[in-house]
Amino acid sequence: MTTRRNFIKTTATLGLIPLVPVSMLSSAAEQITGDDPAAKALRYVEDATTAVRADKMGVAGADQLCSNCQFYTVSGSNPALGPCMLFQNKLVVGAGWCFGWVPKR
Ligand code: SF4
Image (cartoon, rainbow, N blue to C red; front, top):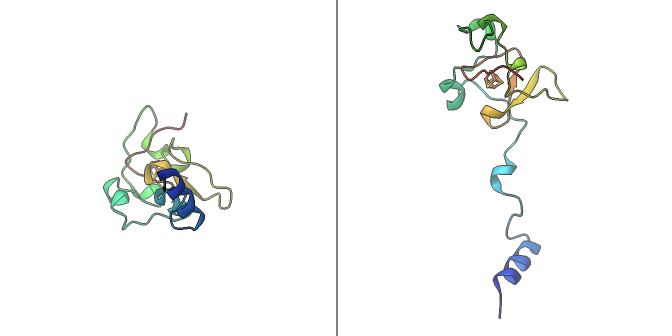
């Protein structure tokens, strides 16, 4: 009799079932583009100086950049780019900005 455990073990061994969820396979190194619906929705720009940035949470608009945003992580390979948690860890430009900006704590 084939149990569910044996079936999963056997098919995983044969490579028939991916052991890593598909969602984890998405490339974290992909740079977000202006065509991305999420980028459009949050008005992401690669050059923050081109955006109208209102003062937020005690920080002047002119001082708001991806590089000092709570959702930004400095990338080791390219300091000008970093993954943004708000955009599913796609890379954003450190000098960029979007409407979701929150000060880094
Ligand atoms: S959430 Fe922050 S790091 Fe991400 S794009 Fe917007 S401003 Fe940049």
